[in-house]
Every structure is written in C-alpha cells, then in structure tokens.
Length: 230
Image (cartoon, rainbow, N blue to C red; front, side, top):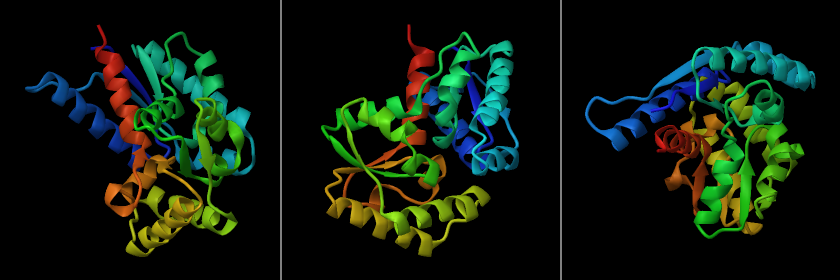
C-alpha cells in the first residue's frame, strides 16, 4: 500500500474522521489487522482561519505548501487536503511537491456523475459557496451547481465555524440545514454536495429528500483506491 499524506487540522474534528475512514476502508479491502499507511501534518487552524478572513490566500497556501513538502519528505506517495475550503490553494500546494494531489472536488464530481445526476446543491463555508474555485471545478465536470440564498449561506457558514469546527452538534442546526436543503431541492437540486468536511458530523442521507454526497467519505475512499492500485 502506498503512503497517504494528510494535510489536516482544518479542523481537527474532520481530520480525525479522515483518519478513521482511511483505516476502516483499508481494513474492508484487505481484511484482518490491516490499517492505512499514512502520515499527517496537522496545522493550527486558528492561524489558517485568520488568513482566510483577511483574504490572504497566498500566505495560507504557502503554509500548506510547506506542510506538503514535509509530508513528501516523510514518505507520502499521494496527498489529500483534508478540507474543502482550502482547495482554493490546491494548485499552489500541488506545485510544491512531486507526488500527486488527489483533488476533493474531482472525486465528488465523479460520484455525482456516477449516480446519474447533473444538478446539485452545494453546502459549505461562505468561501466555498460564494467563490468560484470549487463551483467551477464541479462545473468543469459538466455539473450545474446551486447554492443557498444569502441568509442560507450565512447560517450554513455560521454553524460550521461556531459549532461543528468546535465539536458541537445541535439538533436546531440540523433542522436549519434541512430547511436550506429543502430550498435547494425546490430550486431543482437533484442531490446535495456536503462541501465542507465537518457537515458530515451533522447531516447524513436520512436528513435529505435527495441523495447527499459526503465529500470526506468520497475523498477517503478514492485515496484508499489509489493507494492500493496495482
């Protein structure tokens, strides 16, 4: 098995889920006591969040690029950025190393297309929902992407940073997300992309009238498949 390099800590709650899924999926594939070969670089999310809010994306990208170089030096054969939002700097990170970076939006788009869908609603941080780096990546695969209205985007973003990234899961917030999902479905969404790794702590398939695409799970599964290929 090739070694998977994890750029994590954004937040550590979702990175822990990545680690769990990588090991569960490896054991499912190989059986017995097998677990995933991986190395982790966990950044201080508070530092990254300050750069996000200030719009200093190039600086944040260099932090992750330096971490990626450390992972490569530690033996990583492929890399995952364990957060949707920081895929804004995916090209900067990929350019810093010689090993491949498995892009989360690509693995998500492949799953949506495999399900026979073309129009999806996107939930995520305000950066992910409002900027074009993620929506355009999905659209490049032939998908039509819908996002919530301004009030819906604000509430989805607030819950991520004030609750989920702090390990807080509230039923009231789940209900609020379900209302946002209902609005997206009414607008024509055939599926919902959970475009923030923490959202999977709150929303599962049972909480949506249409299929949900859990990006963390899809990303982890694609990583295990790549690590075990050949």
